[in-house]
Length: 142
Ligand SMILES: Cc1cc2nc3c(=O)[nH]c(=O)nc-3n(C[C@H](O)[C@H](O)[C@H](O)COP(=O)(O)OP(=O)(O)OC[C@H]3O[C@@H](n4cnc5c(N)ncnc54)[C@H](O)[C@@H]3O)c2cc1C
Image 1 (cartoon, protein in one colour):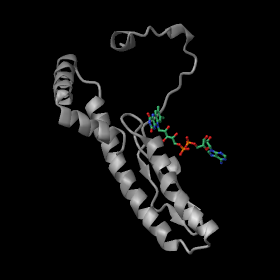
Image 2 (tube, rainbow, N blue to C red; image 1 turned 45 degrees about the vertical axis):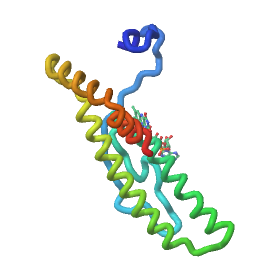
Image 3 (cartoon, rainbow, N blue to C red; image 1 turned 120 degrees about the horizontal axis):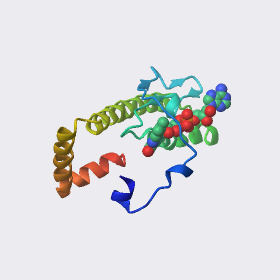
Image 4 (cartoon, rainbow, N blue to C red; image 1 turned 120 degrees about the vertical axis):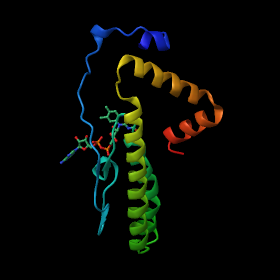
């Protein structure tokens, strides 16, 4: 498949870093407790099949840095900022988890004729520029 789609021949025998993984969907009840903040997979896990858990974690960090900076550098009380952070990032995780779930459902194996029909349908939809752009924006979490 890789050869057909990319022109690159992968040497199967030389692949040494193989590992299995499970699909988990978890969301911590709260991300903030006093001065402790959960981010990344410790805060939320989404399906890796069609999911973007790492990006979600980086976005947590990006939002958290100015709050930590305000607290450390300016000495500001950031309790409210942390509560707002908690709500925003939990909402973002719920959205990302739903998206990952949908992606996983769309990509799941199917009997051959149904698979061909699904791939053709998705391929045609993706050829429509507006649909293509929306999918690209969604996958890159913009
Ligand atoms: C197969 C697969 C494919 C994926 N593909 C993508 C993708 O294409 N795009 C994407 O955005 N995301 C993807 N992800 C998700 C991404 O890998 C995770 O969301 C991301 O690695 C989470 O980073 P993290 O730093 O929060 O947690 P982790 O990567 O789990 O890091 C936590 C670290 O803490 C260490 N640790 C745990 N307990 C302790 C302890 N007590 N003391 C010290 N250290 C400890 C662990 O060993 C680990 O190194 C994929 C995941 C999988 C499984």
